[in-house]
Image 1: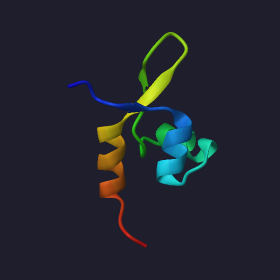
Image 2: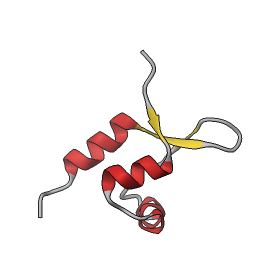
Image 3: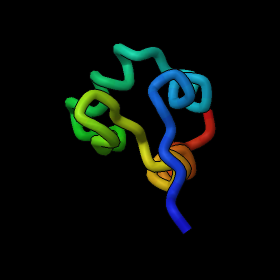
Length: 59
């Protein structure tokens, strides 16, 4: 079964992070990188986001 990929707005909603924070964390190697879906579109694998969220500690 194909893995679901989420677009940036869905990632923002799920994580509660802004666009700039997501890209800042990616630049620091602290957030999953998206995969290229087409020549102009990217998406984050749902499993990578789930793993990232599960690795975060509760405040």
